[in-house]
Image 1 (cartoon, rainbow, N blue to C red):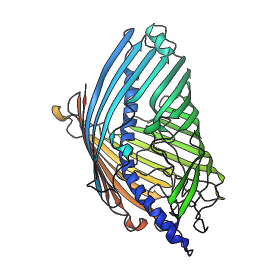
Image 2: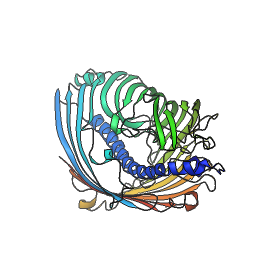
Image 3: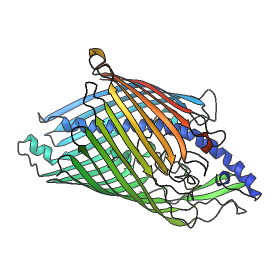
Image 4: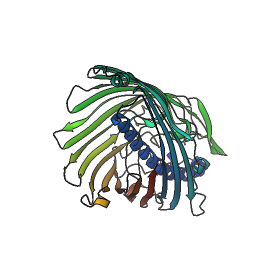
Length: 502
């Protein structure tokens, strides 16, 4: 792909372009799959927050508590790629859960998931997803964890210790670290939380959860089926302020796929590539409120560590070059405020901005093949975090400046059958911080910093306590000058689904 960005006179150009053309087509199909995965990560993040709030508010009234149930969701998706070509995805999704609690201090939660992906690509083999993305999805055991809560024991026995508590949780869970900028993913994790008065201390040791992890390095074989990264970290937060909860954290990621090798390309051009990306993240943030109507959030993270340089060298007769270890020095941050109008429709106006550093010495923001050129520090921010950047384009933070504004409100709050009918609209502006550096979506280097804009709309209707109806639509309007000739079309995303809880 470097050949797409550089002016070359070497006769090897034609060979390399031919070898990489298939990779570009494959990347386009991967991007469509990534949009479906991004929506699922958004739903997972919302579900994780819902479960956290649910357990927090559940009263401890009996020694033994058992709860079982499930949900059935049927959804239809329409996803367009960079050529406005559409593919369609139907997803029946059944989840069955069991929750148990003893004496307020021993808890178990387990959930099975039966998800079937049925794709319709209008017969186009270029749009067809990987075999992994079709049919019944693994794993069946989606979430299972056990928890010991010392404070829960003391509360249930009327001997509550408000200034001291220990909570230990272990199993397979969806982990959101901080506000999700550096980690938001399914993990096998052990977490310990210690409360000492107003000081909270949290430690974690975790490993990515197999097929539920899509790596940022999409040039690595098995990036969406076999990603193994180990995380260890600590977070400190302070609850001594009435309306603010500041925190600091440190998180280290070790690449268990490090040393993996692959020959990329096809004869006569074969590029041997070795993969290894080890990164650490230190950061700080805060959530809270200013007055009665303004809620804020903010987080900043600095990334450091080491990675291997790009093996592709178009000026070499072989097309390849030796790889060397180089340093990582990158950063990303987010900030947002939500204004609560406190009217009958619970209207909310949200303003936010997301920014991440990039590197002009890369061809792709996250891959090793087409990655950082030799003799350069890598400034591109990469993580397994998730921040919502819309439905249709959904770019990662690297080299991205993304302000957004949204409004949501209950449409008919005074009508009994429609009082839980809520409409939301959000607009995004996507720009490059460095117009010479890539984002994780294929664009031209140089020229305008403006990538385009997107408008998303969401309609949620809680019809009854057990039935929910949901529509999500997004349309990305590109600045066609920053895209290649056949990559700058309008992209749309449409989702409609209904969920029944039992």
